[in-house]
Amino acid sequence: MAKDRLMIAALDEGRVIIPDHRCFFLVRRSAVRTGKNSSRYIDLELTDGVSTVNGKVWEVNDDIERATETGSIIKVTNGRVAKYQNSLQVIIEDALPVSPEELDALPGIIPESKLGASELMARWRALVDGLDAGRRAVITEFEASGRVWDLFRSIPAGKSMHHNYRRGLWEHSLQVTELARDIAARYEKRYPVSVPNIILGGLLHDVGKVFEFQVNASTSIVEKYSDRGRLLGHVYMGASFIEKILKKALPDDADLQMELLHIMLSHHGEYEFGSPKKPKTMDALIIALADNLDANLDAVNIGFNGDMEDRWTKQIFSLQRPFYRTATTVPEDKE
Image (cartoon, rainbow, N blue to C red; front, side, top):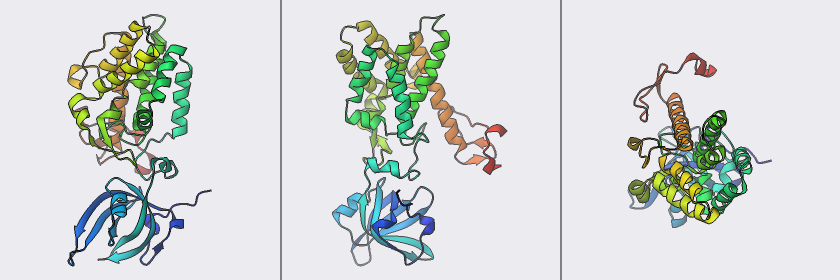
């Protein structure tokens, strides 16, 4: 069983940090500065996901400068705790970058989905395994896409608007799909809706966000929008990527290719929301409505978890209004 990691709250002046202490930090800010003696040092803002502490690297080399870049997660393998002007400092003498694979063993160090990777994968498989062979082949091709598939399962769904945490895109895609599937199931005996199309379209609708963001290689946190993302947008890039997969997996079904691409191109619902097309099939309409609902609910929830004025959020940008938190949604420890 892994030993608990050393948290900032347990640090005191004079403590020596060694690898066995499992001392991990997210580097919120890193700045290389020049001291009075003209020597370079690195000034850091470090967090363990709960508390924040200042850090210093006095002996700078290329390896430690790369490891402590802003947005990285590090394991301090050699260091000590000092005090400067009555505040603690972590003096880092050596540190290693943490790989994305190691992050699952460090819950809470960065904002992440409350749903673990195993639960998300189980929900993904339950949806995919219920599809027919042709539609499953589309997902198989997607899962074989290497870097795209890896990023899809790790990056946030947005920089700040909604699901802006690790694995947020995967969670959002599943939420939209399950919601849209349930809506379609209520209507499929009355209206021309296709539950299989809705499941496939829902799972893939936001894949273009993999190309829209520039993410930190270690944490998958969104650092900024890529040039392609700003110029082309995730709706177009996602449809372009999926079109290639559809032609390979479903080469003889032009109608299904067209209908699925329409879902991709219309999932934002309205032109003013960046949608190249408005939904013109029932399947596309259901996906767009489910996407909008899931995104908006999470945006409001982000407001509820941020700075509040009594029971009112600040202005929710995407909805252009503040929201009131009803009594039934106030956590007991905040009453």
